[in-house]
Length: 364
Image (cartoon, rainbow, N blue to C red; front, side, top):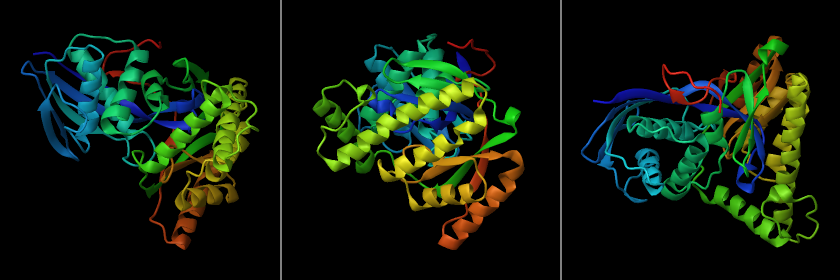
């Protein structure tokens, strides 16, 4: 009986938010927290998926969107998308465990989907191209789960490397490693989980994606990454959304240049500018996220911003290691003052990407 264990990490995005579905740039990295799938091949055309936190779901290999709901939709959606791409699956038993926090904006769902995709293909003796898996996972999210997400999260998970951020070019599906060693510069990238759950498969996220698509059509470009002048737009909401995307793409490329030059500390102002743009132009922040960012900056953080799709989740703060306790204390105090639930903190470091556990993978 063919068996194996595969895992995939969550991600933190240094900068480049809400740019991937407009063909733009992002700079995420894989984190240490992972989803692990222990898998066994079946030949009866059924898949079972068991999670200690969520129970067990069972379904035939061949399902359609809507047949499986809840957390199991992420598993069924991957099987469905693989089948739509021509992959013949005979079935599998999947035991799923993980350490990526749910609802924290660290891409727990894509971590799960990438690990399941690798497990299902690996069990069947397949080793698909990583770019193909990116599209498989996106299709599962978009068409089966119903979340209109882009490609950045799964690219970070699938292409991640230790001590490297990944410059994602969403149009061309390329992933270029960029040196990123915070600790070597005496820095920490502090993740502040606000414990305010976010929702991707909702109208607000989809509305922004539609606005970007319609703006690109109005401006006569393939994607908003091609835009330099959006003065012809008359809708003030569209102007704000496009302005964020255009300037955020520029911030990503500026951050890459600084990291390549070893000037890690200098990315701080870019992070802060990104948050202001996400808050004011893209309107995807939340009171907890704004409070975390403001408190961290006031306590000496070099830069801070919300990460993920928004409307809750986590923020990041670039801090000197010696200042981290004061920054954490300031954020806790600000949350108490506002009556928010107590935040949780993690140190994020670029870590290895997805793969079969116990088997090394050369970067590709």
